[in-house]
Amino acid sequence: METPDISVVIPVYNEEPNLREVIGRTAAALEKLNRSFEIVAVDDGSSDGSVALLEELQRDEPRLRIVKLMRNFGQTPAMYAGFSNVRGRLVLSIDSDLQNPPEELAKLIAKLDEGFDVVQGWREIRRDSMFRRYASKIMNAIVSWSTGIHLRDLGCGLKGYRREVIDQMVRFSHHSRYVPAEIVWLGVRIAEVQVAHCERAGGESKYSLWTLLRLNFDMIASVTTAPIKFIGLVGWLLSLVGFGMGGLIFAKRLIYGDFNQMVTVTALFFTLAGVQMIATGLMCEYMSRIYIEAQNKPYFIVKEIVEPEEKSREGKVADRSGAGRGRQRQRRDTEGAGAEPASLPRRRGGRRTS
Image 1: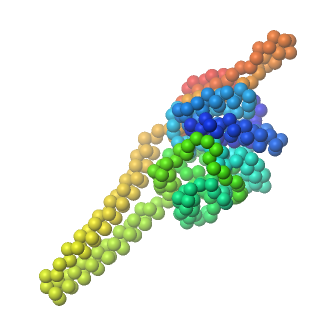
Image 2 (image 1 turned 45 degrees about the horizontal axis):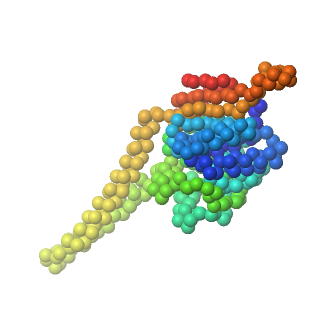
Image 3 (image 1 turned 90 degrees about the horizontal axis):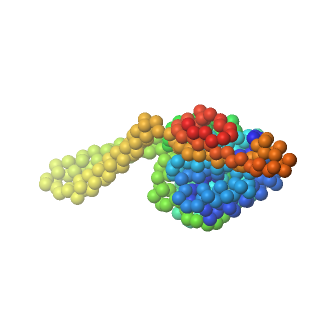
């Protein structure tokens, strides 16, 4: 099988309404570049007709490869599953909701050709709710402050990487991953490219308010221990305030005798108790991540890889003679992928179960 120049990874989770358009537009956009490419669609345990539609599209699009995960692991594990199975020299990622137009991929490829290691899309005009826009700005500010890397839109799904960067990323074994943080840790050259942003073409967003809050906390916890340090600072400040108020109450008792300060003491108690509970919760969050890492479970499990239909050498000979043996379908089963996906063997041809 010919090694493509470009690989595009598309994580898919219940995106049946958008798949036909996103695959078609992605292929059309890459064809204009006159460079070989492949599209790697990663099904993250979809419960709708996404898988069946992908296999239908694959019959007409021989550059489409399908990676099926055992269950729903999440967008980032699905992305890494795709990264672990790409073959291109340049690797790009795009969401399947069509909020990032596939036609913008050419901008990222051009920037990678300039010599940058990673290219990050920047949505200057966002078609999201006000809450999501301002929450994104806050998270970008926190990450920039924590890492020292000043990027304007870390949450954009349009990203481009050189293969050398991907090869290092898939070697990571931890579970709390945030792609921009991993890129920053690698110390690579990063560029930003302004890209268009649209409203979701079809289907529903998979990110509820709670999911976004959890994702943002995972992002913060993966790049810094600042939350624990901040709570420690707040604890010290409140302790000083508590000592000061205790001294004030003692002085008033000496001056005024039996002076009732129960309201103040009660308010102070609830304040300190609240801070203590927050601090305990944060420490438990970090401890839970240690527990998850200690279990050493795979980050994702690939159930099956469906390769495009290809004519075998015997089939070509038969076609010339009029026998027409047709095309052979290649499928690959893989279990146990995840914790160190880079160690997976490269499998070619046939159906293989490990």
